[in-house]
Amino acid sequence: MNASADNRLRMGAALGMAGLIVLTAGGCQGGSTSGSAGSGAASTATGAKMLMGTKLNSLLLPASAMPKGFRLNADGARNTGDSVSPRSSSPVPPGKVCDMLLQTSWSQAAGIDAATFAQNDYGDSSHTNQFAQEIDTYHGDDAQKTMSGLRKAFAHCAAFTDKTNGMTAKVKLVRSALRGAGDEGVKAVATSSLWQGGLTLVGVRVGNAVITTLYSSSHQDKGAAAVKMAETLAKKVRSAS
Image (cartoon, rainbow, N blue to C red):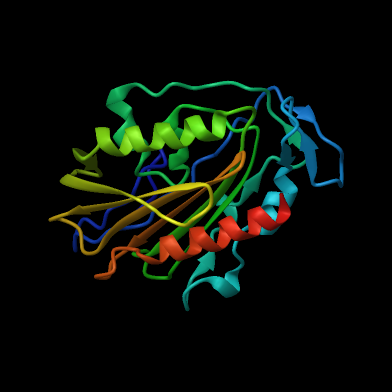
């Protein structure tokens, strides 16, 4: 299927398979202030260490950690470099929350803008399996608020309808707590009778950073590897903080 203009989840219309998601820009791009070039980190008003986009980018899982046949989507790799965006929020209308969960930068469903971020995604040649990863850091207690917002988004979208490229899918999303990963974690698995496989979303907070992963899989595991990958990213962020 072709990429849609609004960066939504692409479903395989012919076979009903969970398809690729086009990467959406994460964090907050506008009104940024410069951090210390080359330092990889800056301090927030509360004294917490904030990792720069360049540093966060170095923490993302490399191609060698991906399943065989997965390749980087170069157009979707982006980060905030050595800039820090001011504290801000972008509330999401209730009617658009579920739609945002079907995007690679689904952390934006919480409605809180990141101060710094890095993200990319990998997909296979068949365009039916994809892994996306993102690390965002936040001002103050916005990381905690983001996690709360993601849990609320999952609850709000326990059952919703997705209309993409002429196909209407009734989607079921099951949320569960993720124990032992970072300071707090949450997982959600989305499935539909029209999909083969499913979509697994994982959010983990480590201090003022939130790691989000997404695994769209056409297999029976429904993208379960998203959990292990998020846990690995959380450990890398913890070591760098």
